[in-house]
Image (tube, rainbow, N blue to C red; front, side, top):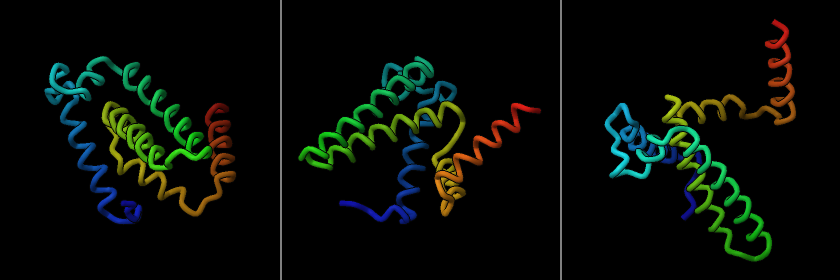
Length: 129
């Protein structure tokens, strides 16, 4: 059931799903009466951002349950829900999954500690200008 995340098909799945979500954007004719995604997008960022928060919490709860003997596949289900709602946010802001994958690729091989320090330094530099 688990696929290789380096498989090009993984990115293809995200791209196909993103295309469907983009087709539900209001300016693309998304109908809030016929589509859950269109309804969230029609309501605006507060609606889909609230769902992202809810889904993130459900990921945490599923992971905690898995630590106590519940099936770990529940974590996969909740992460899928989280990613789905994040794809809605990306579409709203004119972004694509490829943008996220490119950022992850850019970070590949970089220590998380180094990455965070670099972001803080850049933020300080930007604030000083």
